[in-house]
Image (cartoon, rainbow, N blue to C red):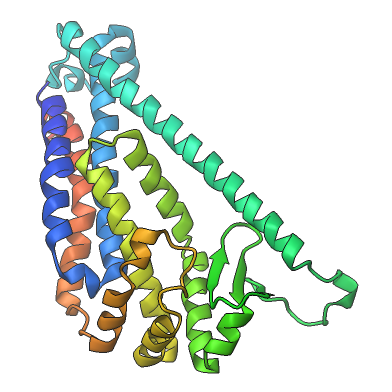
Length: 315
């Protein structure tokens, strides 16, 4: 039972202590893509602890399932886990963990269904407001991965519609407000969201936070993803069109450039403009490597804890 208890303790530490420390760190503003990796690996490690704990708890609760789990394992491996005779504790742990896993799956399915319905509705609205030309009337050239759609609207706005038929949308107000370089920076920002599949990450984060509102790691993950994907898209635009141009585009549109963002993200726009203009240097290669290895170490540690009793009998 040592492995099961160790996994539960590791999952608890990763779900409570690590998020608060990571959320207070300042370096993610300089490395948003790396920070997204660290947060994802942290959440993966927590979920992996739960899954492996469920596997061991089920093996303790059900002797028949224990035989299946350890079938083919060398002699002494099953005994090393100390699961025999712990049926009561195993049933309680397995029931709680299984309920959490089922609720996670339901929350994710509900969030995906809701997001897909919203996306289809927005696509339908866009088609009504800006119908596409028949294929016979389109120029004979390679179509862009994300076609640009222009809507008649005096408000300067730009946003992206993700999905299989991704679109970049700008209003006539944005075309009048922005210079060519600023418009290119805005489109590069929105294209970054689409190509990096930020909507998938946001949906998973929202599903976990909604399904488990009292779990700190999931609520922090949702909040940090909302900010970091914007910073990552800003950096993409800045690399291609310059920090000053990207900052001017964001300021010119008075935080409406990224109109697809929820209000709490729009409130970050002044800070994002300041960040672009300050242009703080990236972390050193050694620091980036260290954080990458630390992020990967979290799920690896969970796997090693689960395998440790079995490995100890082999070496």
